Image 1: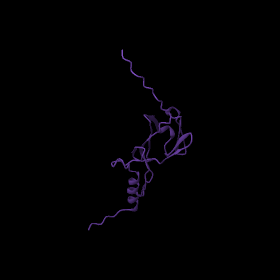
Image 2: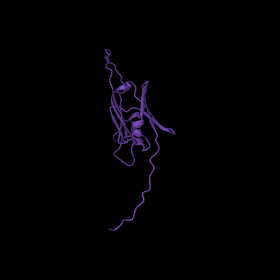
Image 3: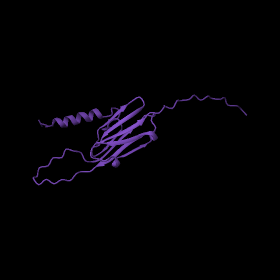
Image 4: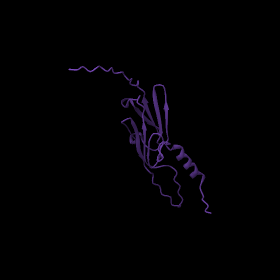
Length: 150
């Protein structure tokens, strides 16, 4: 019998991946926003309020002007890169736990938002994106006219 050794952290990662999996897409390993990419993934909170959506993204070590925020075809995209600080340790012991590299997140926005009204600001490593709600477009009934011959 082969004995497998697994750390509790590996089990937690597997469990988290399973929780994040889209049940309608067995190949999915990303969150419900559809796209997660890059070398690391910033933590993001999204809150719905009566008149707006508020998104907070933890992106420490990245200046707000180095973050690219865009909106296209109903998808809000956040991407950028956190540079690795190069340090030399002459004692031969080094431990790096902070994440570095590129990041990429996309979120599908509801129809009741207007890309022209989105505002963003950054402070203390937190990006805040305000997405105001607009009145949803109402459907309208179209009367069908009888076709006239002739």
